[in-house]
Amino acid sequence: MTLVASVPAFADPIADKKAEAQRVLGEINQLDQSLGKAVEQYDAATVKLSHIRHELSVNKFEMKVALQNRKAAEARLAARLKQLYITGGQDSTLEVLLGAKSLDDVINRLDTANRVSDEDAQVLKEVKHYRAEVARSGAVLARAHRAQEQVVADRAAAKSRIENGLADRRRLLSSIHGEIVQLQQEEAARQAQLAAEARARLVQQQQEQQARLNQTVVGATAQAPVTPAPAPTSGTTSTDTTTASAPVTTVAPPSRYGGVVGVAMAQLGKPYVWGTAGPSTFDCSGLVVYSYSQVGVSLPHSSYALWNAGVYVSKDQLEPGDLVFFDGLGHVGIYIGGGQFIHAPHTGDVVKISNLNDGWYAATYVGARRIL
Image (cartoon, rainbow, N blue to C red):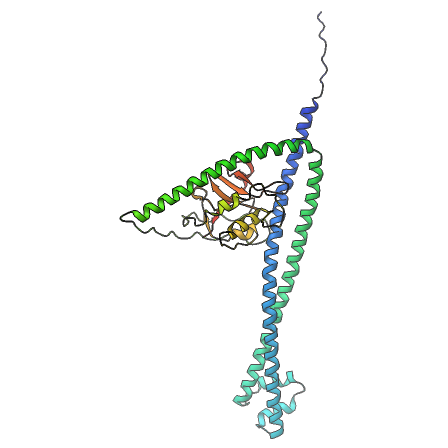
């Protein structure tokens, strides 16, 4: 009988550590996606709050004017009633005056009397009009104040989610610090290669564009291009994460802002910091806002609001400078050609280049917009 010695199974500490690092990285990735949405919700609430504050300022001014007009109209009415009382006036109007107990009662009585003079009716009409204006302005102000309170609360909740998430992220990262350093070095090398390829492609695109322009100028005859119909601008401007509905497929006008790619490329390697829009740190919509601002275009600092900018463009018609959206509009980047886009991904990362067809980006792709 042959005896076979059993070999004990020893644990592989390196393999175990790698497996643990992968598990923690998975948790961090999920947390980053959640944080990205919270940041864009915060940015959207900030944009909305700015609009509300502007509306409040306008409405307060309108309320002030309405109050002044009402005061002047009521003063004219009081002067007219005093004149009627002193001079005897028209019997019907005087009868109304003598039976009234207050200015409101006078207005109500004059409104129902059918024998008052044209002059009295005109004064009454002014008083009623400006009183209605005051009431309308008051209602608008009240709604704006309620909206402001809600947006401030939404913004505070988003900020709290971000801060709590960042604390969890720091805790997870500390447990695999050594592995993260190695991964960061590998990713930095990969990004350097991608950036070099993208810059070479950008130079080639600019040369081709200049060649087409020269050919158009020198050519003997040329037909004016047909302007395609703009795509619908359906989408969402809310601070929730509702996925945008797919617009009807159409041909968008040619891109006018391919130059933003060069601006965005100059930001490669700069860190992601939530709520910022350059020039040294960015969140995802902040990078878009900054890059377009450098070519004279003002855009809202919110991925949700950006979905309403420009026109829809299908994935097969993407051109450098187009905005690409992911994760129910919770993330946005700038297309740079070659199936790639530049973006500020999430906390702990930097402005970098990614591929539209890679994993999470391909799975969560929403659509694209072209700024006109």
